[in-house]
Amino acid sequence: MDHLGNEEQNTRLAVLSLSEYELYQCGQELVEWNFEKFYVRSQSSPCLMHKNSDGRIYFKNRKYYVYTIIALKKFGYEALRQVPVHKQLHSLTISHICGMNLCCEPQHLCIELRKVNQEREHCRHTLRNVFEVYGVQGVQQLVQLRFCDHHPQCI
Image 1 (spheres, rainbow, N blue to C red):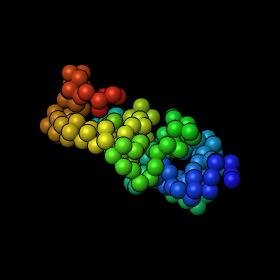
Image 2 (cartoon, helix red, strand yellow; image 1 turned 30 degrees about the vertical axis):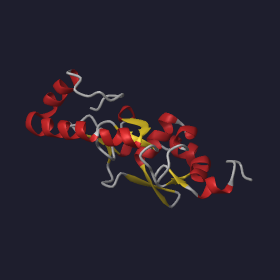
Image 3 (cartoon, rainbow, N blue to C red; image 1 turned 90 degrees about the vertical axis):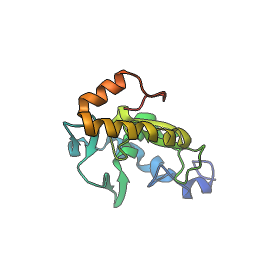
Image 4 (cartoon, rainbow, N blue to C red; image 1 turned 120 degrees about the vertical axis):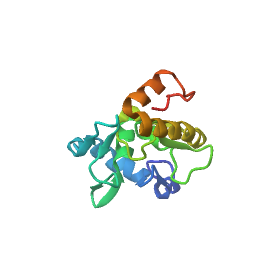
């Protein structure tokens, strides 16, 4: 038996491309690694995006989604261990309340059931349509009207 409890936990992938073993071994280094200089903030969006178009970084010869590292920093190792790669409807997932899959803004990330994440699609569709027609001001007005029943609210 190893430090995580059993061998299966070391081989099962968690948090997209991070295995539990890597989270345990590299997690602290990844959290402390200064990759903030690679972020881009658009004037037309409150999201914080990584300069790499695929949203990944290379660390110790592996690719990692930057938002998973931000989630590790925000929620901690134990919380992310509960997020499986292969999700069922009632599995936990890292959700982007902004609807931007690669967003790295910590306030835009939450851990919730995949079912809730999928229910957010209606809000995301509404927000996209309002943004296309009315821009950022339209989205801000819609959010102020509390059109969304999710917690945290979709933005």
